Amino acid sequence: MSDFSGKVALITGAAGNLGKATTHAFRDRGAKLILVDHAADRLQEQYSAMATDSEVYLSESTDLRDPEQIAKIIEETIKTFKKIDILVNITGGYRGGKRFHETKSETLDYLFDLNVKTLFNASRVVIPHMLAEESGSIINVGARAGLIGSSKMGAYSAAKSAVLRLTESMAAELKGKGIRVNSVLPGTIDTQKNREDMPNADFSRWVKPEAIAEVILFLASDSSRAITGAHIPTYGQG
Image (cartoon, rainbow, N blue to C red; front, side):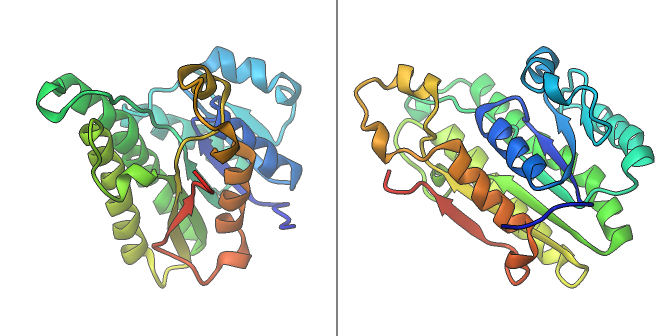
């Protein structure tokens, strides 16, 4: 089990199901945390036990589509934590169910803003601090749908494909500078909402958030020091 004592991890989308599992996994292994989400009330509620923890920063409501908001958080937290060793870009979302010619342009904008622009803004602000330390690990959350286009999810597939291309580009640029960039590719995550939305599905084939969090921790650890620019499937038997 990796020890992250002394490491600082910034997690976006920390109030969501995968964000929560990832947050607790890192904290249980000693990491200091910068937790960012647009739902500040949910963030405070979920991590009320950490509210007085000097090694955990809980953001106010943060729209990562706005580069100035994440830049302000980094400016505030770097004074306290001095560095950022790990960035986990979890913020994202899904919309599908429409054929390509029926998909509204607003849906395309929404999916690229939420899945691509948030990752772009957070990574762009964090990377200079990692370069200064000549060390760091960035883990992006892609999706199996980013590997190949599928019926009735063209806009989502395109957005997640962009996440994979950005992952590869960052990895290529940062190779040799002590910074690794990889992604995980979930399929359907076993959450209460997904169970409600798909009540007839075989839940046993879905992967739990905690299992994906373990893969994220592996990619953040020295155990994966030989891996960069990779996309790790985390869809189990689904």
